[in-house]
Length: 199
Image 1: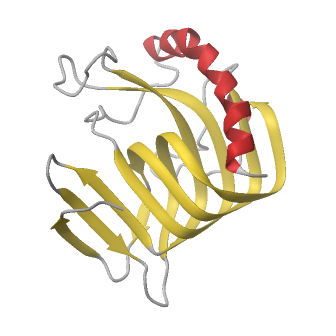
Image 2: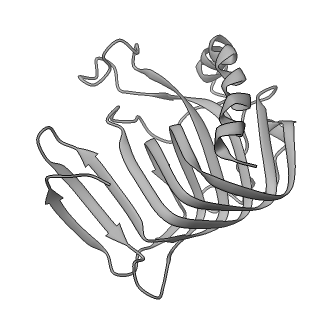
């Protein structure tokens, strides 16, 4: 299944925005932290994940954040959770106005690896293959990704549209992200620098 096809289907969840706001207010989809509101780009030539989940959620900035713009301090995101992930030639960059803070890793024989990886995005692109995928499942019933930070499983809110699969493989991954968390993140050949161009 290609992301372009999936993106059109997943766009239906934007109709749930009002419901997500209510769920977040009730603490059902409370974020792990307040996001800065500055998006960052992540690319990888290949991602392999064992245990995959995806559902919609709402990220919140601090009150009166200078990055809120016309969002009201909240961003509807696609949450992608992977139990064990490996990424080849990872690149991450954030625009700082005239320059970029850029991080690269996993460009040698050893890929980047992460446990209980959770990424909040508003754009995902790439060529994707799933194994044993369930689409339209209630996100509160997910069981593919272990929450090694807090115990239990990574899950979405009750009644929230989602999908989960045994494995996911993505070539030419590109994401526009607002947050990333992981229980463990290993970045071989890490390089961090300021550059004139992003990923």
